[in-house]
Image (tube, rainbow, N blue to C red; front, top):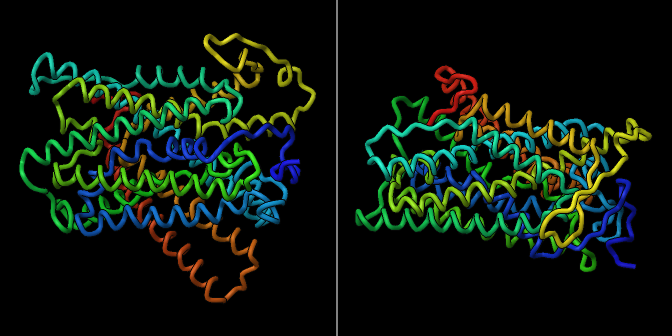
Length: 463
């Protein structure tokens, strides 16, 4: 018997695990390199040449370290032979008890769902940018090329309804691979365009302390918002356990997951530093909030179009990485509540063209539940289409509890680290420091959202 099968699954219906370090790395990169990368030049502009790179490196180190702690909690009590925890909240229940479960559930699933909202907004902005880019090319850069994002959000949501009918992450590994390829593509395009602009004016723009503002208060809010954007750019702890649950064993899942995390975080950090620093060097303190849709680049228009199309394709895959854990929890809860309902059990099959896995099977309950969640997500995205502010708030809400607090406390429980010992003090000090960062970024994000709402019209996303 494989070592990965020695522990009994905490969820019914154990599934076959075939994942490797490379498939897990693909899932991680698909989840991490998302819309957050597009705001890094703007975040650098708010922090300056001194704090900007340090903040990116700092978040990378913290995220990697706490992710390795979380990977050890996939099984309980022994990290190699213990009982499998298939989802994040089950690991919290096993190590910390029921009192922490409610807080974890709220933090995880609100952050997961909020990320779906953010991805819907970003995909619509990129599709609008393609439309405007072509308009500028035809009519000139001074032409007033307006575009509305509501139709694009609806189209993005409709595609997600189709993709959501795949049972789980193992069934859409191909989509994560495509998403990773497109994330590399638009990252390289953004890097190349920024490098070209940087070379054209012979020198790095920007200042040591970052962009000035009309008041010290606004400067502070913008700096806090920048911290939230960077935190969001590294968010993936809330799906780490679910990704680890796709891995085959032997070797032990935690060993494979730690290697995959090192690869994933390492690649993203290289991209983030390259794109953030080059973008800031090219635009200076006037860096746009979204480097590929803020029209710092007009030409070559076809390359800008390709980059934005790659963003949309990438977000199609990343959306499902974050949505599948929500689907799984909703369906598990409902099936336990009404175990005999035919609506939940009767299966239908549809033959999918060019599919190597055979017909696609689904239930009406899955179609209805998943479609309703995606429709709600699209509706909320249409109500609050504020790119930087939404990213900052999501980063603030998810960073401390999911990336730091729970992994640290589960590690303390797992290793029986005594209260007041040097290691306990260091771990709790790390948690407190990250809590203060999350509070600061939440304040900055809410200040920006409040300001934007005064000028916004519901269901009207013009660009």
